[in-house]
Length: 304
Image (cartoon, rainbow, N blue to C red; front, side, top):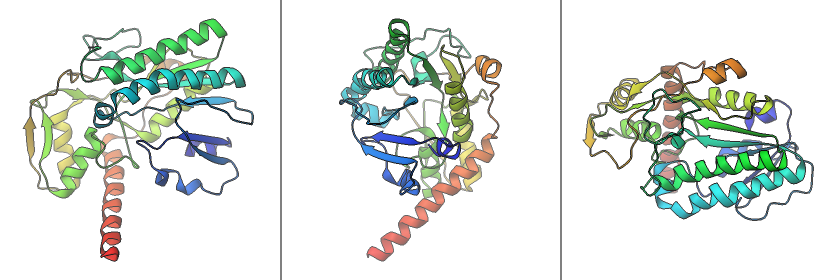
């Protein structure tokens, strides 16, 4: 959103705020080029003005959220995607679906290329999110084929940065929050499972380039630098200067053992690759969480 406004676009945001926060958009309040509508995307969408691009990012994305909201997650992937595609078709707009690396499930191919179909358990605890996104991709392709709609699909790998919720359940805010509080960092299994982390500004640039390109096939956007979850926990402890230790817990069902994007298509077609070094991005993110923690303490002291 910030990038779109910076590049001269008018932006209309629709969000029911189930997992979002008005705080994240408050700095745009009063701008002529910005409008916010609090609405569920699964309901009828009506906008009384021209629309050139529809960016469909609606969905709980944290395991904590989609495990608590499985039906809503499935509805936003199906009904929500249908409504968003319908809006794009009605307005003659280009449509971009924010899909996910989770469509690959617990992959049997490594690294993951866009032509890999995945290894997903449709009735497991993660199935509500994985299958919602897989259905959304299928529906997007159906609209392209049947209606000639201009569509784009981005498969987002682990992303991090400021404005994440401290307790949203994903590994970056969880580890940072635990480290700043001096609590043990919870690592599931033996910590040998791998992840690849992409800083938010890199991700946003890649997605923007995809929307403005002519590429209709799915495109992985993420950082191909792979490291184990245990290595990542140790990095967070070092960068925060925490005395926290690592606590090992049983591995959740269907938790992916490897996650690394093959970004050859993004490099070739979008001329994109991540620029922000992991430790640099983590330092920025840690400082943001520190500032939020201090602000909450001050607010709590005033209230008392």
